[in-house]
Image 1 (cartoon, rainbow over the protein chains, first blue to last red):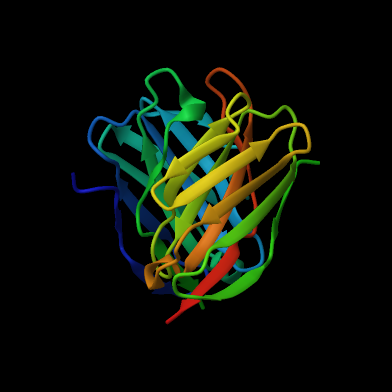
Image 2 (image 1 turned 120 degrees about the horizontal axis):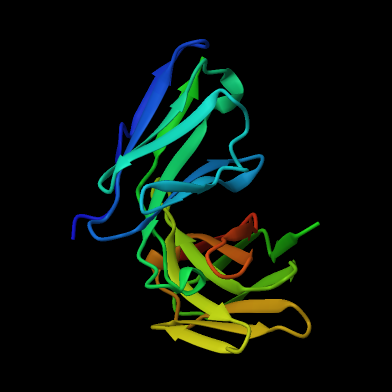
Length: 117
Length: 114
């Protein structure tokens, strides 16, 4: 099993630019999660999908953030326009819940380290 | 407000020694508690998941306990190894059915010295 694959691993861009982070979940997993991690705030859940449908996006900080899951094997998190305070490590995770969302482990990718100058 | 507090913030131990990390929470309604290990530069890896009815769960040298009455959990590491050096994160979830509402602790940074 290849695990959750995120790209790019590192992204450095200037303020105001559009940033797109990508995630390929583990095949067969029906839940996908996007998280953000900073030194100041720790880990935060941004949004999660079930069967490609967004379930809860209450953690998305602003309208500048958007996430899509066009199919079961691909998701994107987009920031437009980006700001320096968006600098963080963004993680994608996937899980197969078999009807028990709250009892199954989530498998994390190794994250995208985003720096906005 | 839901909160998860972890202690200590950091810990240094010698290889082969045991250690215990603490997690206190005020999350309601409680659904489950997870411990993750996060190596530097990597994503978190799930160690244990416990629901209300479970008070002990083991994963190799890692043993987690849960006291739902006092809202406390601990992660005990036995015979520590250099590879145990990492951040350990406690996550308490509320929600029911298909919902997932996590509250994250800030983590305990563990360093194991030879």
